[in-house]
Length: 280
Image (cartoon, rainbow, N blue to C red; front, side, top):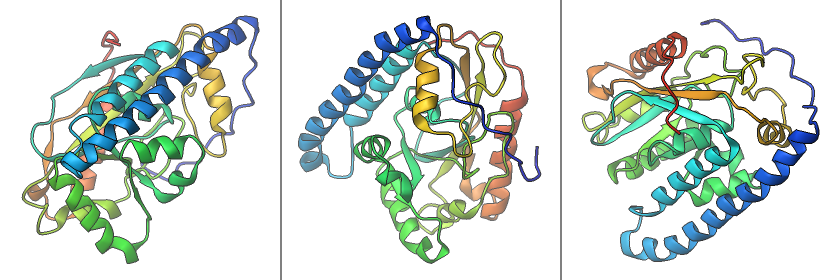
């Protein structure tokens, strides 16, 4: 799908039966212990890591990775991964379906998300995002220079930044056209000949018998209802994470051709039937 996306009607709040509530009672406390216990451990580790390494974070991203893997295991959502591991400096881009993307992508590699500034103020999610090193930006051309400087500092220190060029989450049934504004930062003098970008396709397969949009999170859908649905599901589907061949920034003349190439890679991975066996 390449035209304007018309979001489908949002589903009604999930109906949770007795078994579902039992699963919530079992899973929710474990998730709280893992997520917020991991957050406390990360913050304590950062007290030592920051004075020793500054911007560099050699330890805390691995805490985030372990927390996200454990959370997916508790929830019962399995991951099938394929594709090359990017070596050297660079960033990643992916399609955006759900808040689950944060857990899924963090569970595969040590990365740092690029997010809109509003997320920093969200209760719960905002605190976690700040603690894990998320880079917050405003989609405003007047701040392009400042954003480029932030990108440069983080990327030149070896941080793998990941952002969602669609600009919004969807129902997971298509990839929206990539917004190209953020790609301009990679054509700065310091980054253009140093960086590569890897496209990632994230494809959710619903639980057997459920509709394809089961994992989608769009429009005004609230986080609480989506979390409840996922915690109350007995047998989840699985998610495929496809890492495509990295692309050098200086192989493209401008941000638009670079974004177009990466968008094509993500679309290809999103529509191709991989059928890999989930690994986690």
